[in-house]
Image 1 (cartoon, rainbow, N blue to C red):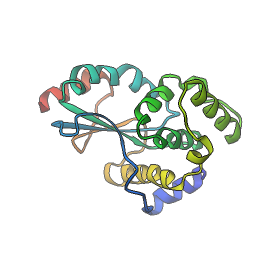
Image 2 (cartoon, helix red, strand yellow):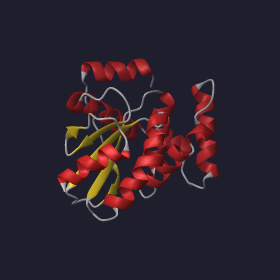
Image 3 (tube, rainbow, N blue to C red):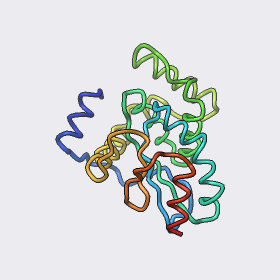
Length: 191
């Protein structure tokens, strides 16, 4: 899968058949009054910043109190992000921990001059972190790949996502500068 194919899929608006057993990576109460959808790419430094500096505050102040749920949706900007998304999505009982680990240690694995080097770095990182994953199986899982690409297609079609991170709050695109202060103001108004 390369950038051209991803672009064609998005441009022509194809929807890919997906196994309904694949679950979104979420944090928070399923019945929370407020749902944030975060469209992200695992190689995006701004997305890593969101996970390091904004998400923990949201978790402490709103998610842990059952007021907010966040869904992390895939919007891979390159093949490294697509492959890392496949790994994060592959083990449902640990997906959030894997996602958090990939973002908080982004510079440890986002390197290499080729896709093969990038995959070696992701695999080494995942193994070093102690996650037990059949790396090759996950990387080659077409259902997971389709799930990820459908996130990207839906983000583009439904919310006009064109950069990462893009935040959607209760199905409305967040248009202000992305920082905790601005998010908190909007969330508090909705409670």
